[in-house]
Image 1 (cartoon, rainbow, N blue to C red):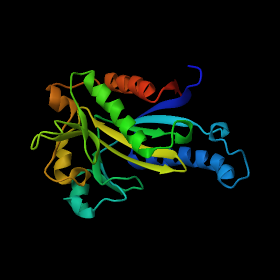
Image 2: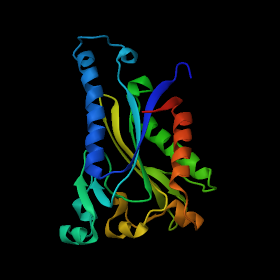
Image 3: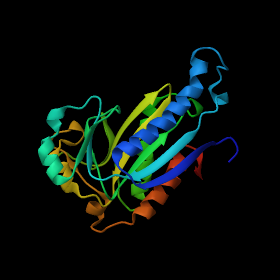
Image 4: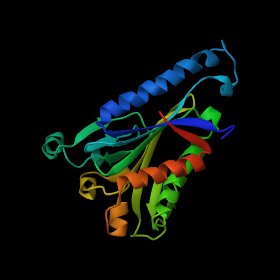
Length: 241
């Protein structure tokens, strides 16, 4: 493990979206505070010497729609009263991307990483997050990949009319500290996606691992595989926080 970055792992279990967002933000702000002196030229300019910490959070949210910075409200197809009737929360967020859904039986992953200790390339970061998901799905015999210009993980991305998204992604990065992340549909109730234009992409479907395999998958098994592939792809050591 020598030379590898240590990433503190926490499974937050079931937690409402705002509480998890606030927790992410506290972790990010703590790292930003440590970097403040560096950017002001008051401390060492070597990013490897700044004592920032890395985190990976897993969580399941109650039903909630979240809208990214570049998202459009017209992609939310039901109004506030209808959302309340269905028990669905709604938040406008500071992540990239458009509208998506989080809910039970979906693994949401929030990496809070100091990318200066890995590499300073957001495009590469997103591709590596996608790779974690692609390898996890391959463990179940599901062949997934990327769709040009559309961040996330897809199945049959190159077959027009059959494209379906299984994992949405949207991140925020400030001074190379990341937050937000990915949402992998495991046994997710896909009906919730009928009330939005997922990720603002028209005429493409959403799927889940259960939908692809025709059977429910143990959430803990998926989480363990995600952990293993995250450690491999990012060449890091995961430690329980």
